[in-house]
Image (tube, rainbow, N blue to C red; front, side, top):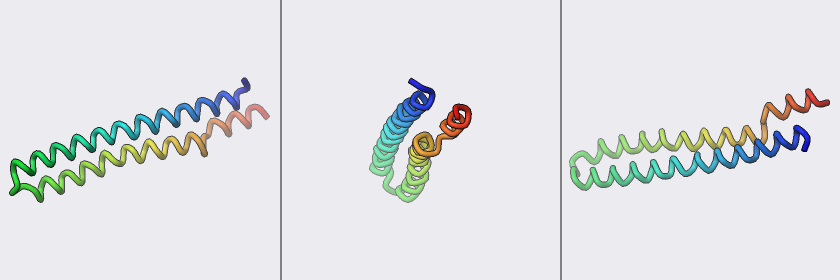
Length: 91
């Protein structure tokens, strides 16, 4: 197996792991945050506006983690600088 194939295999594997972990973690976090916010709203209906605002900010922060993982996986697959380096070094 040459170095280009090895780099390609490692990049695809790493991109898959990144997407898997980057989607499972935020999904679990968002589900937990939503459940806790609904429980808080049920116990304190007067604080619904404050809880909702804080929930949306928190969900945006958690969702940004998933977007970062997606961007990293796309860079690994389509704009990996290690491939360019290996091609220049090999040829």
